Length: 419
Ligand SMILES: Cc1cc2nc3c(=O)[nH]c(=O)nc-3n(C[C@H](O)[C@H](O)[C@H](O)COP(=O)(O)OP(=O)(O)OC[C@H]3O[C@@H](n4cnc5c(N)ncnc54)[C@H](O)[C@@H]3O)c2cc1C
Image (cartoon, rainbow, N blue to C red; front, side, top):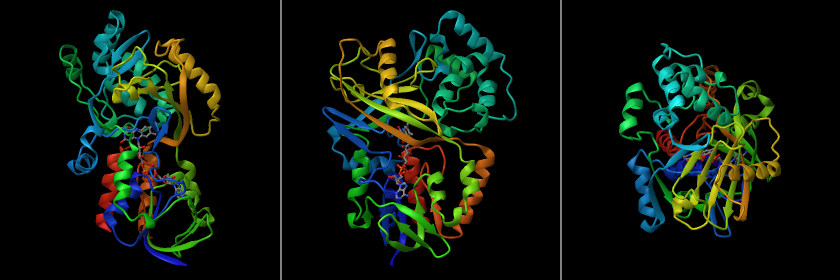
C-alpha cells in the first residue's frame, strides 16, 4: 500500500491550487482524463468554449498577478461588461432593479410605486421573502422571481435569504434613483478578465507549476475508510493518507464513505443542475456588443446566454446557453437544442440564414447548491467532524457554497498554509 501525506481528490481549480501551495508529499487523484474540472476549455472547429461562461473577477492581487504574469499580454482580454436582460421585446441593462427607468412608463411606475411601499423587515424567512422586502412586488415579479426560479430550478422560499451572498446585486432606493441619471455599475463583476484561449488557460498555469507525476488521471476514488485513513481507487489500488483534501462535490464525496455513514446529511443536500450548450454559427448576430444576457421569460427555455465572439472580438457568433434543472429531472438534450434554436430565433439572436457549424453539450451536475440555514448548520458540524479526522472538504462544491473560482483558490491556499 502506497503512503502519501496529502491525498487530494480532484484536479479542478481547488485541487490544483492546494497542490501549488502545499508543495510537499502529495498526490492528486482525478477521475477524468484531463485536469480542470468545471474550468476546462473545449475547442471545436473555429470555436473556443468553456463549461458555460467562466470569467475572472479578481479581488486579490496575488491571483490576478499570477494570471497576468503568465499569460501573454495579447492573450488577455479585459472588458467592462455589457450585460442585458431580454425583457418582453426590449433590452434592459442588468441589474433589473437599478434600471427600471428603462421599462415602459406603466411598468416603471409600478416598480417605483412598489419599491417605495415595500415592507422591509428586520429579518427575512427566505430568499424570496428578502426579495419582496427589499425591492417590492413589481421588481420581484417582473424579473427577480422568474429569473431566479429558472436558474435555481426550485421554490425560492426554500433558499436562505443570503443564498447568493455577495453575488446578489443589492441596491437601495437612493442607488436606484441615482442610477436613473448616472449609470454606475457597482456590481462585483463590472470588469472581467478573460484569456483569449479560454478559462482553461488558467488551469494550465496552475498545472504547469506542479509535478505532473503527482497527478493521477483517469482514476476515481471509490471508497474512503476514515478510521484507517485509507482510500480505494477505481484501478484497485489502496492509498494510506495523513490528510485527505476533498474537492469533489459534497453529495458525491459523502457517498464514498464506508457503511453509508453520512447518508442522512447527504439526503438533505439540495442543488440543481444546468444543461449547457455551446453553439458556433457561420456568422455574427445583430447583437454584436453584449457579453451576456439574462432571460426571465418562462416561455424561453434558457435563463442566461453569453456571446464569446463579442468578448473575443471574433467574426462568427459563438455562444453559451444555460438551462436550469431540478437535480432529479431527466434531460432531453436533443429536444432542448431544438427549443434553444427556436428561442434564439424568436428573440432575434439568430436568423434563418445563419448556420450552426459546431456545438457541444455539457451537463453541470451539481451547478448551484441551494443554501439553506438548517442544512448549513449540519454541514458546519460535519466539516468539524471530518476535520477531527484530518479530512478537509473545499471548493465551491466540496465546501457546498456559492463562490467564484478565485474564492475557491483563496480557500485552498489558506488551507495549505494552515496545515
Ligand atoms: C453555470 C456556471 C457558471 C459559472 N461561472 C463562473 C464564472 O464566470 N466565474 C467564476 O469564478 N466561477 C464560475 N463558476 C463556478 C466555478 O465553476 C467553480 O467555482 C469552480 O470551477 C470549482 O472548482 P473546484 O476545483 O472546486 O471543483 P470542480 O471543478 O468541480 O473540480 C472537482 C474535480 O474533482 C473530480 N472528481 C469528482 N469526484 C471524484 C472522485 N470520486 N475521484 C476523483 N476525482 C473526482 C472532478 O472530475 C473534478 O475535476 C460557474 C459555475 C457554474 C455552474
